[in-house]
Amino acid sequence: MTTLRYLPKYLACAAVIFGAGNVYAAELPDGLYDCSISSFRLGQIEISQGVYRGPAHDRNFEGDYPFEVTESGTINWGGPLGGISTGGNKVVSTEIKDAGGGRVGFDIMIQNERGNFQTISCSPE
Image (cartoon, rainbow, N blue to C red):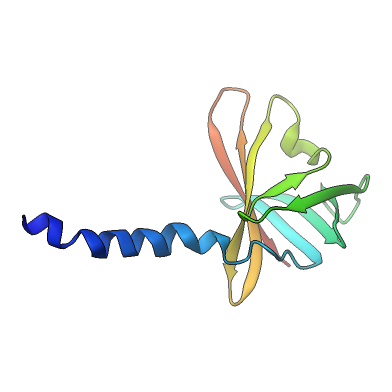
């Protein structure tokens, strides 16, 4: 009985935590995004007017590919993501996130060739 009285508070907290990722669903500002796994830097992705390039180091980008931000706050990439999507790795999903300080970034979830999942965090430069 005591546990049930806290249920509304738990549900409210869950709504805040899981709903926070969709706050920025409609926007992904143009610019350079630094991408990394933990402290290992994977390069930058450039976003400009519905087109992305990269990731690449030293701004040596190859190809221009379209992308789409969905209403649910995910990104559908219209082409490859350099080394992120090669060598047995596959992109599972990409979600818009709050990168702190009023900035918007995104997390790329990949599955590597061994079947393990990893998150690549990309934040504005």
